[in-house]
Structures are given as C-alpha cells and as structure tokens.
Length: 109
View 1 (cartoon, rainbow, N blue to C red):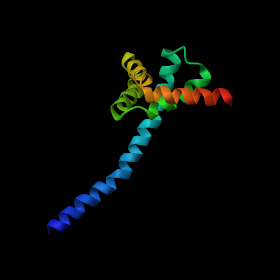
View 2: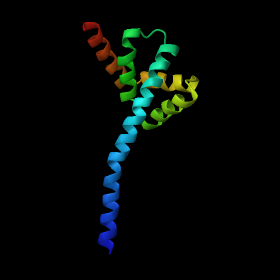
View 3: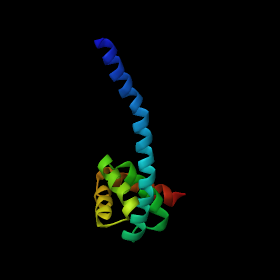
View 4: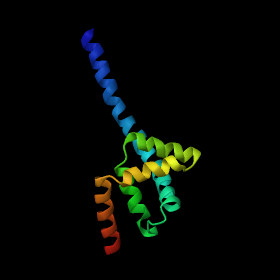
C-alpha cells in the first residue's frame, strides 16, 4: 500500500512538470509584451532596434516573481512597479552581459 502511495505521488509530481513548463512559457510570452512596452515608454534611451534583444535578455534573466509582476502589468497596465522591476533586472551583471552581446550582434547584422 505504501509503495502504491509513493508511486502515485512520484507520478503526480512528474506529470506536473510539463504543465508547469507550459504555464511558465505562456507567462514569459505574455511578459515579453509588457517588457517591450515598458522599454518603449519608460526607457527612451534604448534604441528602437535594440528593444527586442533587450526584452529577450530581461525575460531570460527575470525570476518567477518578476515574471508575475509583468503578468500583472499585462492586465492592469505598466506602472512604476513594472518599470522598477525592469530597471532591477537590467542592472544585473548577467543581463548587462546579455545586452552587450545582443547589441553587438544587432549592430553587426
């Protein structure tokens, strides 16, 4: 009986992983629109041709809590909290590194 219960728990956990990944991917896709809007309206120093690469770097370096902030903004609109979240992710060394590589690649294309 105990083995059956353990098997059910393990199977249930494994079955949830693809669902969680699908939800995460959907949230990240929705967040991209918000980050793009935030960059375009709140960060005028970002050149238009770099908005998409910057968005990708920000999304790739955002944690689950930050993605939820973007998802909320997709419903209620971009606000100061959204801009502050984007600014915080932009300041991370990993994001800066990604931005440098993306900017270089865009300019060489």
